Figure 1 (cartoon, rainbow, N blue to C red):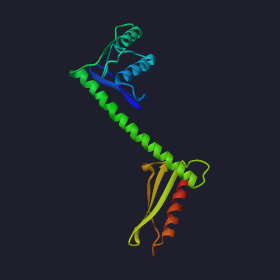
Figure 2 (figure 1 turned 45 degrees about the horizontal axis):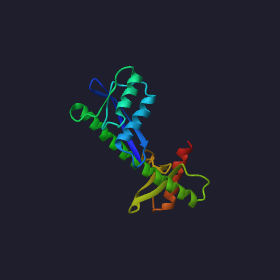
Figure 3 (figure 1 turned 180 degrees about the horizontal axis):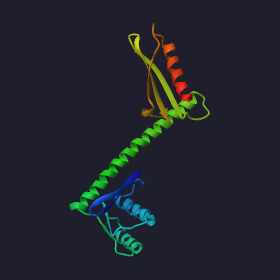
Figure 4 (figure 1 turned 180 degrees about the vertical axis):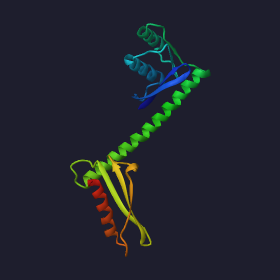
Length: 195
């Protein structure tokens, strides 16, 4: 249902820029049809048109597209699907990047869906009027009653925000008291948060 197009701009034999485009595609679409549709959409709004466009496969409408691109450029534009050599290596690299970007996009989409589902359940369970934007969770740990440490983990929009995690060294002495330790950690956190 989704595809990724990688667009490499190559000048003087060097890749000078790279862009990813995620496309919604019908399940029965062929690679050729996807390439055809992408080229038409992209170059309809492009500010510059190269004299040569390298592709993994030639679209069925390649002659029509080449004529259209040539008219936009006012010079001949060639559409090619190279089979070997440096040009084939560039197309292969773009295809691998597209595959990787699509895989990353799928993982991100799954995490977003799972996060949204968890936020809905949390809002329902706590009878909240909206979704919590930030969640901070605290825990106290100690080693045989000594070296007590408080930990804070943070979630924003249902996803962990590891750069906001904190540790607090607990300063209470004497008999371990989880409630007193939690009180100290929370007081320090809110004092800092209010400041």
